[in-house]
Length: 187
Image (tube, rainbow, N blue to C red; front, top):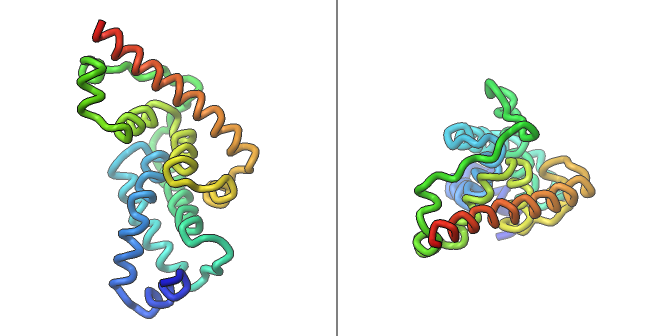
């Protein structure tokens, strides 16, 4: 079913189609919200708000971009609004790197056996600034183009490329640090 037919069915009150809409987009929507808010409960609430806002705005959707891009933009803006309401916002320039706990560094082989690649990526993404983690998630895991990310975040394409470059570099350094600590615990 093409997007326009799908949206028309939702607007006609087909709750089954809306349920499929939620099922299709909820995981990435939560990922975006969580990367911004860094709090599970607030991210869940932001995603719920975004679904409501998207449903109300569906009649105005012009099909000028991909539907997912349009919806993720709503999630992004809803999450930023929620972030502004938080009592404080961390400043990443002054933040110290989080310490790795003993449980995380028990032994590299045990960790690699327990966690698959996706879990290791998730762990590293949690240790880098949320804006960089969001861009890396959209670009590599969601396979969004720079233009799609521009439409979602409102950042300029050159700014996105710079942040992706910095994010990849920081991701690599954090991953290297985690793996180095795990290797030291073996030796």
